[in-house]
Length: 148
Ligand code: RTP
Ligand code: MG
Image 1 (cartoon, rainbow, N blue to C red):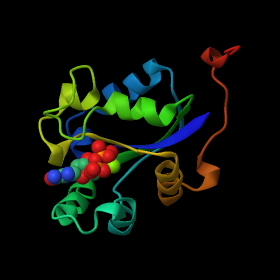
Image 2 (tube, helix red, strand yellow; image 1 turned 180 degrees about the vertical axis):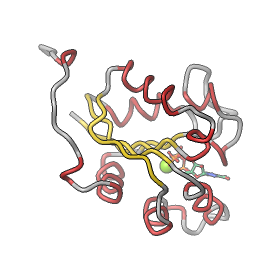
Image 3 (cartoon, rainbow, N blue to C red; image 1 turned 30 degrees about the vertical axis):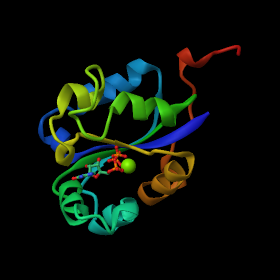
Image 4 (spheres, rainbow, N blue to C red; image 1 turned 60 degrees about the vertical axis):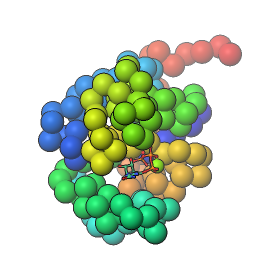
């Protein structure tokens, strides 16, 4: 079982896409273990995207993700990290396939609607930035029974 950190970015909240995105995650069969709406602090955003600190787009990226409310989630399930990367689609929406969130709802990299952790290490690190352990809820869903 894996957990991954997901953000519905501010452009998606502004456009009323929260429900659509949450619905896709639920319908795929993954479980939401934590969820919060709020404006991400500059400090958290910089820590979250610190791998990109030297890139020319870093300042704009921080401005973008702190520009308004976003939704932070912990999404849980078998292979949740890889599945959520696939559900989101390619970073540049031009390359994102139809049927992915970015392929259906985005046109440019600078407003690409969603984030998902890209590895086990990143997921752990990002969940710790955005959630306390006590905010991540442990519960069982009726469709989780699997014998293998
Ligand atoms: P994310 O971290 O947001 O899930 O996106 P990602 O893994 O698919 O892509 P990553 O390389 O981690 O980039 C993080 C975010 O930075 C913005 N970006 N802008 N060339 C550019 O202008 C550029 N490259 C990346 C995007 O918002 C991207 O999602
Ligand atoms: Mg990334």
